[in-house]
Length: 231
Image (cartoon, rainbow, N blue to C red; front, side, top):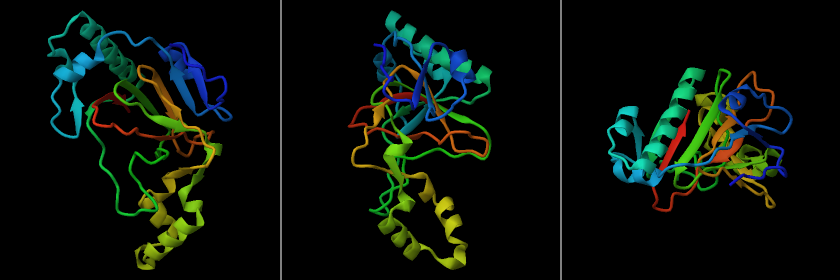
């Protein structure tokens, strides 16, 4: 199914992997989507893989050792080709079989886990690539529809009370604990789900970035495994 992102300038559709990596972000556009049909049986692959930890890294050897049906073979070829394309581009893709991420439940007023809307940060120019092959998929949200949590008065007051000046200045405290990376959706916000099968490129916060970084979050798994590629 072809996705309709015409109403959302944040996302731009592309027609190939080369266009995905060559297209520059601009204006409100901080997410690119390479749309392609999801061919094959990815659930078969998930059912044959062994979940050793809540997040289990799946190697190419793990995939190649699977005894698959014709539909399973089609699915595996898509995953292996995505890995190949990203490596040739210079990225370091990882395929994960995922039960759940670790939760941050230390403070009820701010969470720093990936289920919270957040941005990625890097000291070097890079982007986040993401594809969910099976299970729940991530959400993104327009930057104008969120408020940085450290800009919320009641949150910042609680963080100031938590900060010990002997440990350094307050701004460094916020950055070192990743509090500044997390966002609260506004009342009228409409998150956009990144549907399965498509390969996305999301803008990251780094010194050379020309657009606001893409605000995103991991989905609730609801007891269902996820198979995803990320780098």
